[in-house]
Length: 199
Image (cartoon, rainbow, N blue to C red; front, side):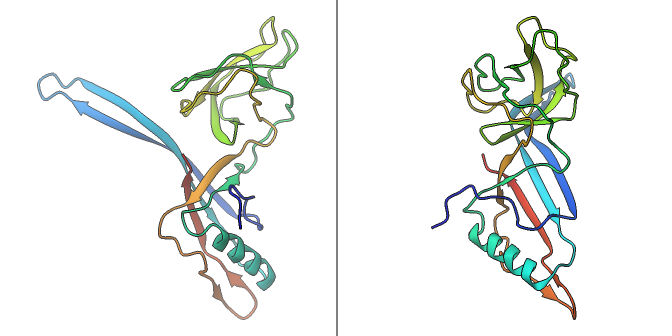
């Protein structure tokens, strides 16, 4: 019996589209034109494309995909090109639901944070992107980071913050067939994989 989440696809994707979609309610007054926006939640969507591959790689991929059993199972995915050589970082304060900022400790006082907007991090396989971060840590070795999306759940003080291999948990979009392949004389194509964040 498969235990979820499972590892990422056994073959490397040739293309990756990772987007953060905001589920919002927007109300515009018919009298004043003023807008009120209600942020319900945000979730990552992922689309992976694969070059034609060998029969052996296609078999491994289709078996992996079938093991997800459609939209039932989940898998971990690290955005391409992400990861910084930062280990031993933890939350310096509790991150409460709907927080836009998190306090992360583990730097030396006044040390360069090495973080820039656009970097990724994860806490308990929940993926975040950094919007802003200071260039250096404060006198207590902490960095206050603005992230997107907002936190959905509470993360306790001391929770590990993963900068080196940030991963999110995803599931296939409903209705996707796990066994679709096409062949020509030399190669096999498995098409694309579309997934959404497993909330």
